[in-house]
Image (cartoon, rainbow, N blue to C red; front, top):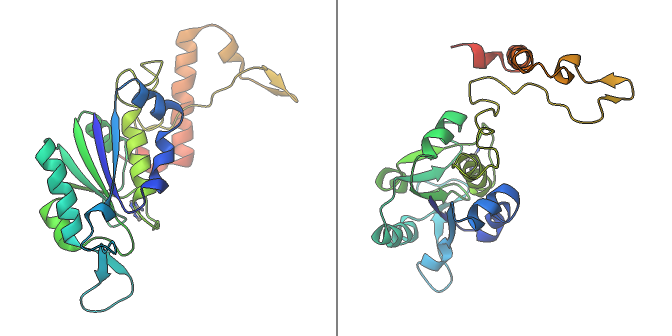
Amino acid sequence: MRFDIITVSPELIKSPFEFSIIKRAIDKELVEVHFHDLRNYALNDYGKIDDYQFGGGAGMVLMIEPIDKCISKLKAERDYDEIIYMTPDAPTLNQQTANTLSLKENMIILCGHYKGVDQRVRELFVTKEISIGDYVLSGGELGAAVLCDTIIRLIPGVLGDETSALTDSFQDDLLSPPVYTRPSEYKELKVPEILLSGNFPKIEEWRNEQAFERTKKIRPDLLED
Ligand code: ADE
C-alpha cells in the first residue's frame, strides 16, 4: 500500500508516522508514505498557492493549478485507486470506510487548508471526501494522519496478533469490553472473577455481554440498525 499526502504543512503531519505501530509497518515495507509540499508546485517564486475567494468573504482558497500540477505528476507515475480530500463538509470516517480502504493499493490524500480548495478540484480530481468528525480543524493534516492510522493497522502483518484488529471497537458495531491486567486486586478494586477462571467459553460470553451493555449505555445509536 502507498499513500501520497499533499499538504501545505508537511512538518505538521510527519510525526504520527515516525512512532510505534505505523513506523514499524513502514520499516517492514508493508506501507509507503510520501509527503508532497504543495508549495513545490506554486505559481511563482513567492510560493503562491492560494487566493481570495470570488464573491468576497474571509479566508483564502487553495488554487487549482498547483494541485493539478502535483496530482498530474503523481498520476503519471502510477495508477491511483482513490484521491481522497480531507474536509469537514464530507461523510464522517468510520470503521467500515477504513476496512474498505485497507483493500486498496495506491491512494492520494489531499489536505485542505485555510478556507479549503477551489470547488473544481473536488469535481475534477477527488474520488472520495472524508471528514473525521463534526468539528473544524485548521487543516486536513491531522485528519489525514487519523485516516492513515486506521487503515494501516488493518494491513495483514502490521499488528503482532493478526486477530487483534478484528476485536477492536466498532468492527462488529459494538464497543470493546473492559480489559484488566495485574494486579488482580488494587485498592479493593477486584478484577471480575470470571476473567481469572480459565473458562474461556464463559469468558467469551461475558465479554460479548459487556460489549453489548457498554454499547447500549454509551453509544445506543450503534445498535439502531
Ligand atoms: N479539515 C478541517 N476540519 C476537518 C475535519 N473535521 N475532518 C477532515 N478534514 C478537516
